[in-house]
Amino acid sequence: MLDLRTPTPAAGTAFPRADRVTTAVAAALVAASIAAGVVLNLTGAPVQAQAAPLYALWRPHIGPGTPAALATAAAVILHGPRLAAALPWRRLLPAAYAAAVVWTFSLAMIDGWQRGLAGRLTAQAEYLTEVPATTDIPSMLREFTSRILDFQPDSWTTHVSGHPPGVLLIFVWLDRIGLGGGGAAALACILTGSLAAVAVPVTLRALGQQAAARAAVPFLVLTPGAVWIGASADGLFTGLTSIGVALLATALATGRRGRATCCALAAGALLAYGCYLSYGLVLLAPVVGAVVWAASGRAGWKHLGLMTGTAVAAGLAVAAAFTAAGFWWLDGYHLVVQRYYQGVASERAYGYWVFANLAAFLLSAGPATAVVARRALSALPRHRTAHVLLPVAALLAVVTADLSGLSKAEVERIWLPFAAWAIAGAALLPAESRRGWLTAGAVTALAVNHLLLTVW
Image 1: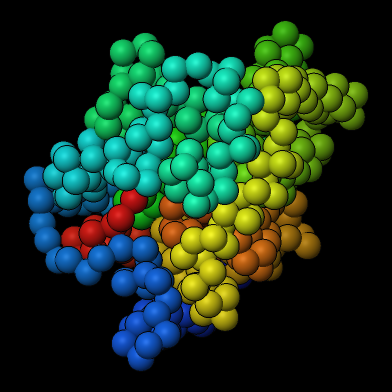
Image 2: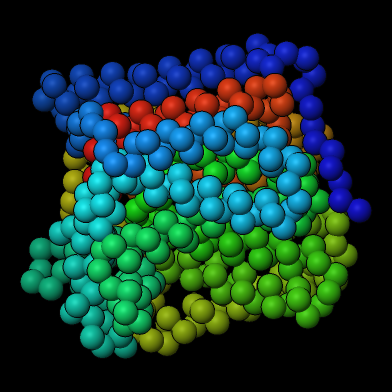
């Protein structure tokens, strides 16, 4: 039987004092990051981001996607919590996915088709510029690391060099099946990235938290991170890895051996491939660990060990395939660190970005994230359930990435795969406050997309 219980606040008010203090601290962090960025940019110590803490340009505008974005936000705020609680599960998931796609697409269309979608991934530093020349995949994989460093005639473009070859492979494969060009690539990012709105609830439900799964749905649909899911490759990373985590949870929770094995194999392969999409996605390890921990209270140790081992074996097979093809992950990582400091990162002050990154993450993950994180940390000693463990795991990943110094700016998109799990604890919010938090998230997304022109 599923455990539908979730921790409830001790106070009977929608906004207890601890939540108000947490919200004030989060708002102060964002405000201070904006103010400090303006001052530093104007006084000769630029932070290399005009609209810091976000990597964007100040350019107030409206666009063809504005009416749809406003209508979608209003519909989810007014009806989302009720429908998430009442719809049968088989109808809720496709409805959530469709709403997430519409929200993400309409936000992108605020900048218009070319600027907001088709032109994003064809910009000079982007992935698609390398697709036409990639005619021999085995050769590309063998030579990949030799082209990572900058200032050589055949250096990869910024985004290709900054990631393992798995991303370029996806866009090459899309091109080869007739889905080449910026428009198709952007739609692939949106359609894949929006899968997080399904994957996170599926994970929670598989781990016995159906009420928490339903509570999270409206927040995952109306995430401010959709501004960057549509359309950036990081949205693609978010969707693929979140499905991998959901498959792992399903494998650990189901009692049917055949289905569990298939899910474990797919989970291991997807999560391992995620590490060949972005070096930073190894930091999803705490999220994966949280899933295993939460499942340990529901599955027998024999089943848990067998499915975990199956997933690990599938992941090792993916790593072995890349290695055999000529790409050694650790070589790529060390060269990327060098390339990182060959560029603008060397001019971005760690002392500013170590705090401003967190502000950017809050703007992307949503204002409720700070309160969910505080409540999850407070509940952790008493409640070791998925909707408590997953936000804490996401927070651990974000803090680790932040302190590393290898994520200075642009984390509003880079940390999207963590943001999806940070809001998995939406059920920890008092029920009376959830519509208010949804509204705050929607206003954040609409303000960002209408006041700023995001670069990618």
